[in-house]
Amino acid sequence: MSQFLQQIVNGLSLGSIYALLALGYTMVYGIIKLINFAHADIYMLGAYIGFACITMFGLGFFPAMIISMVLCAIIGIVMERIAYKPLRNSPRITLLITAIGVSFFMEYIMVYFVGANVRAFPDVIPKTQYHLGSVVINLQQIVILFTTIALMLLLQFIVHKTKIGKAMRAVSADRDAAELMGINVNRTISTTFAIGSALAGAGGVMVGMFYNSINPLMGMMPGLKCFVAAVFGGIGVIPGAMIGGFGIGFIETMVSGYGSSMYKDAVVFAILILVLIFKPAGLLGKNTREKV
Image (tube, rainbow, N blue to C red; front, side, top):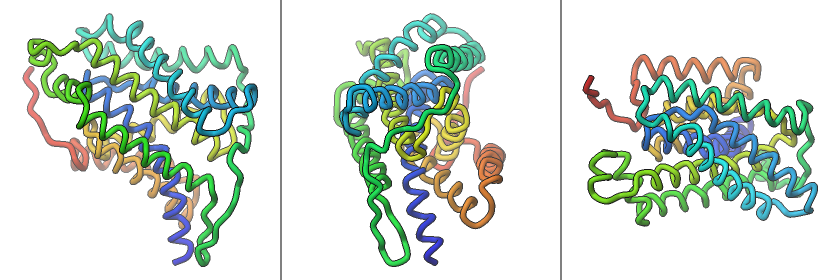
């Protein structure tokens, strides 16, 4: 039982990071029906921005995370304007291929500028441990969990209580009708990219702190897993991305704890196959008919 509870704690920390990344995937898909595979590289950039803020400027965790979120939001807007906006009316496969191209471009630009070596992320938060019986919780896990919860609550407030949130929901439901009603669709899409990229930037700083290492290709596997999390919860549904992120985090830690860490990736992708076979819309998604 103590091992099970310990894996629950570990799953909460890992699932928090996956949930933040999955939110970016699901928000962009909900607005323009694009699987933005370059989103995981925004998360990588966020980790490097946080690393630079801490090592070069001596900032703490929260100031570094806020700066990372702001800069990643700007990068997300620029990426959307340059790479995706000109192709908005193109076939979806064109956008998908472009997203993969943008992903590789960002990865190897970073390899060129910072090198391919793994860098040790500084211990910006003390590794203080708290013992609840036989379960060990460290301060980093607490900070990650509560920061994620705060960001998710803020996102829910933006989406459901603000004017731009209403515009995002309207564009997601029917982009043409939203434009006829006077909603600035271009600005709404850019805002969606900005919010999703900001969450990815926060996730990058937290994963750097969680694993104590960063590298230019660090976004590839987590990016695919967070895509699985978004599909698992229901792509395009924000609560589904949260559930999917935490679910994949729990599954990974349980497989590592009771089986072998060598199989955790295989289990995650096996879940993707099963979801696509038995419930393609995901846990909270709804099956919709599409005109052709």
